[in-house]
Every structure is written in structure tokens, then in C-alpha cells.
Image 1 (cartoon, rainbow, N blue to C red):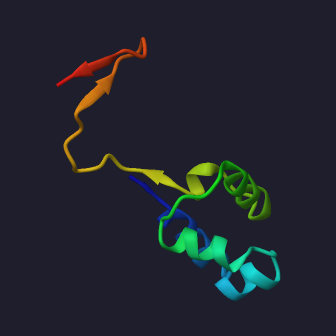
Image 2 (image 1 turned 120 degrees about the vertical axis):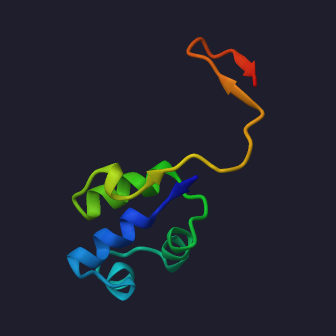
Image 3 (image 1 turned 180 degrees about the vertical axis):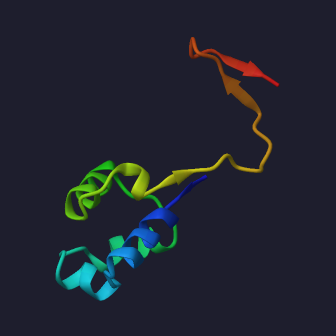
Length: 83
């Protein structure tokens, strides 16, 4: 699962509110909402956030494996392996 939790910690450390994100940094309220609820967003948005807040991708998102059962796993060669 991809989480935007690091982004919100970064905003807290920098003292940037959602109001400031919208009015000082011109982020669309829908983008802010999508980030808040971990919904899909584009790489373009990810790039823009890194530029706006002078940070790295790891400051915006984190990957944690889902607890759900995965039916197959890709090998280094890109082939699908059944578990």
C-alpha cells in the first residue's frame, strides 16, 4: 500500500496548513483531499509537490506491503511466479 503519511508529517514540521497549501502554493482542494485520503494521484502531482516543498519522493509517500494475500510474484525477469 502506498501512503501519504510522510507528506502530512512534512507539512506539520514545516508548519504548512491545508489552507496555505491551497492559497499560498496553489494546490487544488481536490488534490489535497486525494492526498489526505490516500487516493490515486499522478506522477505529475508527485513531481510538483517535491518541487514546491523542496523535498524528495520519500518525504511524500511510503510503500508498505499489503497484508492481503498476493496471488503471484514477479521474478527479476518479469515472469509471473505462482506461490
